[in-house]
Image 1 (cartoon, rainbow, N blue to C red):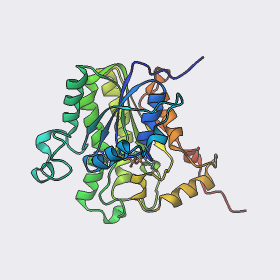
Image 2: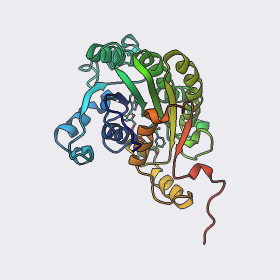
Image 3: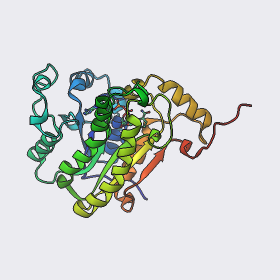
Image 4: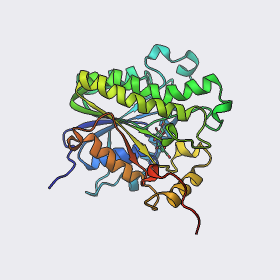
Length: 297
Ligand SMILES: NC(=O)c1ccc[n+]([C@@H]2O[C@H](COP(=O)([O-])OP(=O)(O)OC[C@H]3O[C@@H](n4cnc5c(N)ncnc54)[C@H](O)[C@@H]3O)[C@@H](O)[C@H]2O)c1
């Protein structure tokens, strides 16, 4: 029987702070396939996430097919706009949500992983995070800071993770990120430079696949997912309309579930996908193939 077998593999999923988004569903699918899973959580969301876990609010979604609950081997604080601790501004470092967590930079995460598990502790890295401080503003109105902030949090963060976590990967490792088709088609409302950030993420996926493939023998892909009403997507303000529009106009009309993206992520992270790298893989019910909306009637 051909099955996704990630037994003995360790994954890091960066960008998990509740059970509604793609990161959680990917963590669940990787755990279902036998991997041990660590997560990286943004400090402003960390306390709430830990509370939800502790109070059993996510027990239903943590259930695996064995009946056991998925557990996270480690939950690391991670702010992916910083590469090193000394880059975190003093006022942020000493603020309520950051002062207890220590070095939550990407470099700090790499150091913690090595301290906890040894020199080459990882097989799978998933980048499931994005942030656009001015996402509600059209590109025509976005400030330089807003634009660069979106690209920093949502695209350079992947480059930095490959730089710092690439050396920690065991042979045949895999990086995966999440993108959105606003990178290549106009999606009104997906503003703040987020469309530019996703275009950079997809282009970087190809270049990094070559460079890191040669250097670390790893693969790098990105999943272009259809719209899902996650916490991050709700910030866009029109996510419900986007979901409805896609299900009215895509080849497959059922709404996309995070679980479907999780299953694709588990496949792409496994040795079954050993020849797949540098790809943007659409998991969107086929919507990307359409050239016009389905006419009414
Ligand atoms: N929801 C959609 O419709 C959709 C569609 C296509 C692609 N995506 C992409 O999927 C990925 C996951 O998003 P999601 O929609 O599942 O929402 P989500 O809210 O589950 O995930 C986004 C995560 O990013 C974290 N984050 C924000 N800024 C961060 C930072 N500086 N450092 C570390 N973490 C940070 C948030 O805390 C959150 O946990 C994102 O890359 C998003 O762009 C989403």
